[in-house]
Image (cartoon, one colour):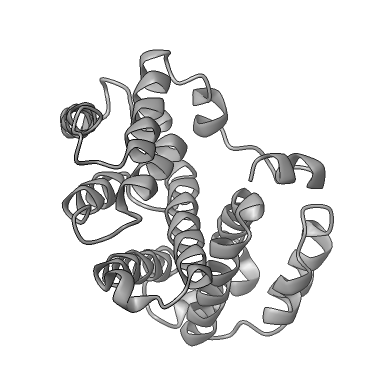
Length: 238
């Protein structure tokens, strides 16, 4: 699977997808390994994150790998594997952040950690708007990042990235969790006035609030994810 994912691009999506689903995905362990590989790719190839989310959507309903999912005895085991992988990635983000500078000896390591953190939350956001994860996970992740901002250097920037991707699809009064989402945005507003927060992060949070106040200009794209973009479009969305 890794060799196929290494070659996966938007323009080659359909042909390589066919190769992927016919390589012999026969058990739950195979699906778990595939999810791990997909997450690894998404965290470092940000411009292809929507493509990897589309890949998960297609895999979940592909009859050719359903026997592998049925081996667990649960029809929703694909989404469960996906959720477990998301939780592992999120916990890893918070744990790596809690190590602070002691956990990264050089600037390159800091950059890589930040890249993976942002990739993780953007991928989770894309999965959320495609209905591959429960919408409640948006609140769980947002609240976790808010609580971790004192220990995790990437927490607030990751929060801004997550909300930018996913919030437009759920920020409507008829969403059952809208009250809790409003509370998160109120906390963001408070943080934009908190001088103890790094200036750059305050501006990132302010950008999110301004996009919300403007009615989420990207709401249509978020609410109705399209088929994989062309290569040049994907690069522009990084």
